[in-house]
Length: 404
Image 1 (cartoon, rainbow, N blue to C red):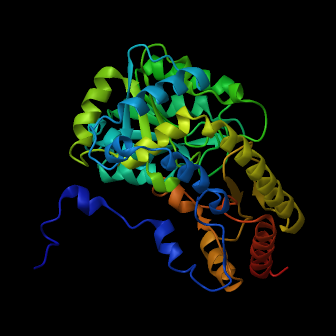
Image 2 (tube, rainbow, N blue to C red):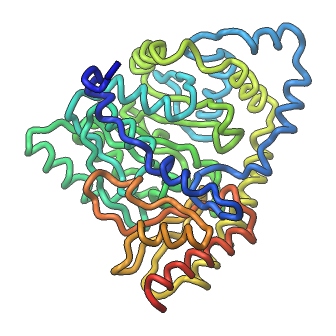
């Protein structure tokens, strides 16, 4: 049967992930991949998970293997609430939590609950590919606002909001990754966090704050990276958290913190996606938090990622030709590289594949029709020597194109 005439508007709007397509070219033996945004595989806390499970009695084991409630495992909800108040300084007064099957599901739930056709979502330039894909899949219009070294530029954001409103269109929400943005690695400064919140309040536009990397800082202290949600007294911020970078991406456990009425609606929407987030993952995540394992693991990973990031930045400085620019992250997993004039990221990618190294071209992280001069490099799942060699190979490919 030919289904092509039967697809919904939402299905017709779906596009293949650029990252997934590029991965098909990265299966060569000996290829160094700086493409996937994965945490360090060699340090995933498998031994901690085994220790946690080894302590379970029959009752708890049976509970972990059963269905759970859609909203989430109650003890985990309580632990996350405590984590939000203690570590993130988020008041839970009038707020509630929904456990999701990863942050990607959280983005889909929020999109489904809030977006109507042709309504506008404002994102940072660049922004997370999974978020952009989710917004497009619900027939939204995605509009970007540029960043600099301090993050999203408030003046440009307000100018964009005014322009969209003057055109008679609706801005439904602003999406931001304030800590170590994926893909740029840029962090929104405290001053601009306050400015963004003021703009949100002024125009009554919610902020969707995605914070999967906030604990993985190399510089400063936790107070330097507090969420925008920590200064949200009127419930205008929807906060997303995740265990993917601080426990394991394979667990697929994320959460939404928002006003109670929004969480109630989001819970109903989640029921149309799945009955519940896997309870086995939730029970492990609960014991991981309650047992105090997360603190030591995160401190360990900060040191590991600091070393890897420094290796990448040093290699970029050593090998890259003139005209190439890059960000200098204070945490997270990514460096955003701007190409010199006359070189397209796509041609650099193909030449780099010949040198057996891969990355993601920047167009995957940009709104449609935005000019691309960028590539994303990730150091999360590579040893230091492979990071240096990968950058050297990219520089070699670039010099070939520049005929240096």
